[in-house]
Image 1 (spheres, helix red, strand yellow):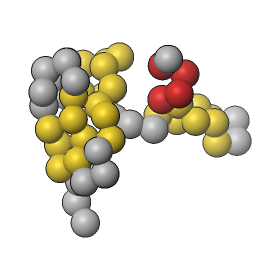
Image 2 (image 1 turned 45 degrees about the vertical axis):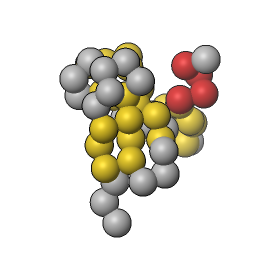
Image 3 (image 1 turned 90 degrees about the vertical axis):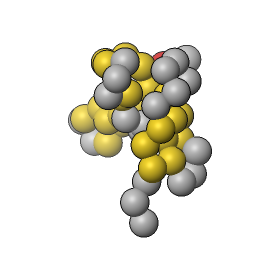
Image 4 (image 1 turned 180 degrees about the horizontal axis):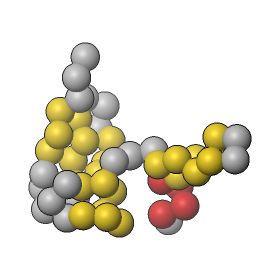
Length: 49
């Protein structure tokens, strides 16, 4: 259900989560509160406070 990864703000479509830098476009990273993680390759990106 990729449509849940996007939100509408006015007349623009924005992504909720970033794409994985290793896997490329189309592979979203999961939001785990303090980090983003890719389910395909396992790449983890920590959020800054």
